[in-house]
Length: 205
Image 1 (cartoon, rainbow, N blue to C red):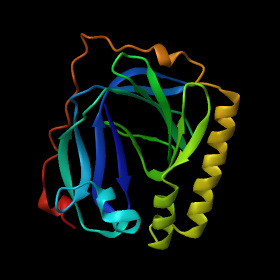
Image 2 (spheres, helix red, strand yellow; image 1 turned 90 degrees about the vertical axis):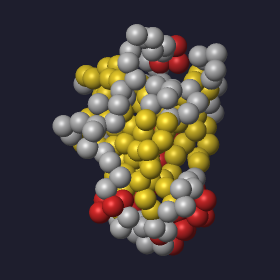
Image 3 (cartoon, helix red, strand yellow; image 1 turned 90 degrees about the horizontal axis):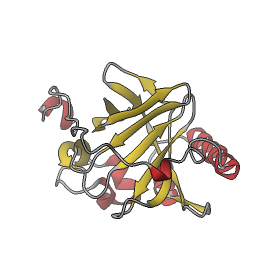
């Protein structure tokens, strides 16, 4: 399956193929293995969007890039009707590095997997349960450029407050034992769907 992030202002997208670990009433859990080929939006120079600064990353022309997911794998957990997903990052020894609460629109099912829109602001949660916000400067840049309206920014901050309450309760998925997750070494590394190619009409608008 694929976990896709789209952007209404740009035809480029982020696409991560993954292995479904769990899919039930609690949501969907997807493992993104090291070395997975992913689709990412980048600047026309090939540099990461962040290199354009807090405003330019939302306004500069971008193209599509295929890259390999480097570092260790991540476990991505989508929660039904929730404005965020929870990711787990692991250290080289397999122990939990941190939880990452990625603010995004509630996921939608597609023929290939799930689809959502990233909302820029995130929270990093350490195993000892303390947390902090990440990318507040980028959210301010998104508002200044009109990428998000003031009303949308307030909704995003409200989603952050909802996530804060979730962390305080330490409810699923924080309480599910995923810090001890280990992927089955027999799982193949999923591939991007064949239709994702460097189509000029798709990537250079």
